[in-house]
Image (cartoon, rainbow, N blue to C red; front, side):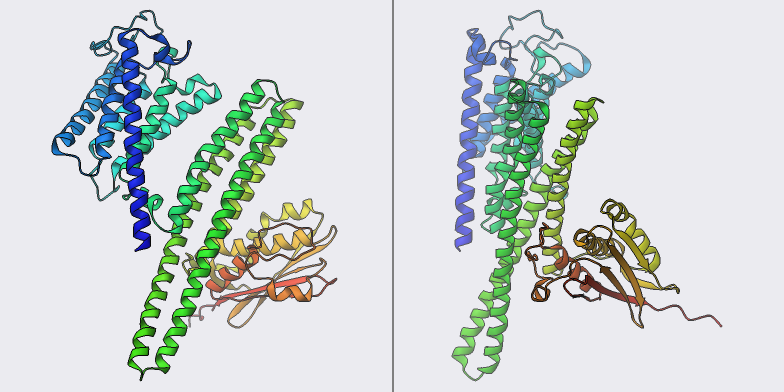
Length: 567
């Protein structure tokens, strides 16, 4: 009941916020339209030299804001509902006709139907015409307002996807103004999206999503669970902070406050710090949800045992059954919360990281081939390594959650052991050469096969060999040995490192646990995930180590019996 009340309060708050957005956009449209009627230039473009909001744009904002304001009402009268539909239809009609003018290069007289544009000598000869991206946004927005109550079997609620697309287009335009790149906002100065136009589109796009926050993709955001709370806290900084960081650093760089390499370092450090905090916050929340689920499971099992022992007492039996049902509901709620958290981590954190990585690679290709460019490339490599570490941490968290829920996906097939080992070590050999460590293999003379998931095998082998290379000193040796047995194949990774303290061995495969005093950093998830993956494939994993004499990690996989010879 408490969860439903939270969801209802959040939904009501978001619906009210959508009405505020609609009212603000209507007010902006009225002010700009008044400015066109009385030729108040300062209100058309906010500042001399900036693109102006056209009269038709202001009219469409008035209509769109009115439609959104009515859509945000809980039970609008039929007359208002018809007015909302009519406003959305007019927006679609105006934007469609404007788009036809651009495509066919004709003038239908629509651009100056309300007010004559005094600027007659413009670059493309389209006085009074809204920008192409503005036209597209109004077309998408009008369609979103028209199908606000429509649900389809294929895509669910299309209005949310249309509004999201409008938000992306306007966000690109706003970033263009923030970064001083006018080509982001249109195809020529006179047909660019004005800065207050981008802001109004963002408000309208958010308003459409907020107006029906209990449906479709917005259901997670307005939900009462931990996933909803995380989404409401993490989504705004995940979208806003990277743009602000890049904008502030770019402004400082253009003001000659510091050189480009230092600007790149600031961008990298700021983004890595932000997403590190967000990832760890999600990780701790996920761990708490998992602990609650485990406590619920333990309580349920204990209650069932006591219920069996006290079956002759009807009153006590009923009381224990009720407690067991409550515990089951708590466990299911914890599982749902964990799934919501995984959705936040995998979409709202990985996507910005991917954008940072792609932007860094693009920047590296644009750097000059000189000494300064080479120094800048080193900074871009630092950014890429930071992105890779964050991406690896996210993948580890997702793997751990899948293993805990017994939902890991495996593609079990028969594979040649020698081929698996040699292919798995190909990517690790350069690391061994760089660390001045000899990487050896001891393979059996006879051919044997194991049944496993090929990619997961490479993940386990890479983790064990990578750890061995990390802790083995220079001129040391790491050996991968394969020992066939009757029903399994044993894989051993030996190293000549310092070994592991005896008191640390019982905790080695625990989550987030690391050996103290080694000076090596890590997440503390690799060995736990590796053991879980091996166990999921029907194998086992253990370790033998003695301080000063190195360590040996061993895991087994089911062996595939050779086919009987045909007589």
